[in-house]
Image (cartoon, rainbow, N blue to C red; front, side):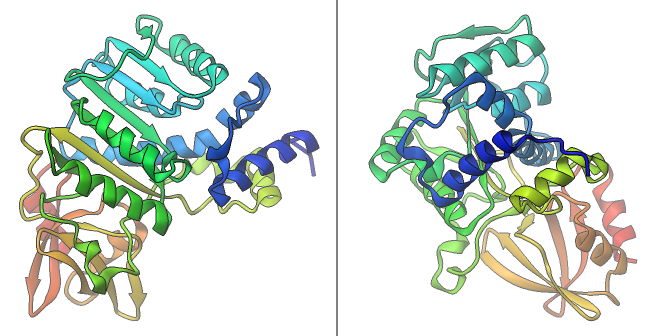
Length: 340
């Protein structure tokens, strides 16, 4: 088999990944060279970019876009978060500020952003204001509690926040804490996504302690025919098919409305002839039954993951019999078709 990665590259990637998974990466500055940053950017950062694509796609389906004209990429690393946002809303932003404990990482992120967006002003991080969108990515498990508390107080100065994390139980639960903290106090923030409501998070009930708010992004299909990605998957034990993530979008002021909608969490539990769907809504988090005989096309769609996960359910006899997606188009017609 042709080797696409050198032993040194694989060793570097293993060391980075081990630190991220163990939660010890935050103890030191792990960005040590331009070569390492470039290697990370075309592997792990690429996968994180697919998670950002999933979160930003859902925002597009909801018809939401930021009102800010400045981005602050906090703990920017190689800058994949801000590049994803700049690509999602071209022309929206006038300037980008980068924040990281590593000057090398900030230089790398600035060069990548400038190459793709030559008209964008790249400025020093001079604080947050009401014209700022803050993006954060895969950093929450690197923050000791006192540092996280200080960060949240700083974030209250921003207008909007988009935060993407790993789809693990611990990181998801920490993002719930962020949501609950920032929706209280002054100024307060409203939840835009994945939440479809402004009530307290239903996952905080004792009955739902084992659950967490996570979703699955779709990797580009071409990576499954890519020999370099195949080798990387084998060498590092990465499942290319599974890309779980958690995310949180907040804004000051009136929230984006998704009245009556629910968000499915994780993958449904599949049984013969039916699924059980974990659904988050204003009344809490419930496991709902969806039977093939009631809505075969809807069941097939949900099993294939071809949806954002945001539905207005039609219930009968305590079971789902139809689902209206929040995506653009004619949702009533779509729901009617899926129910057949």
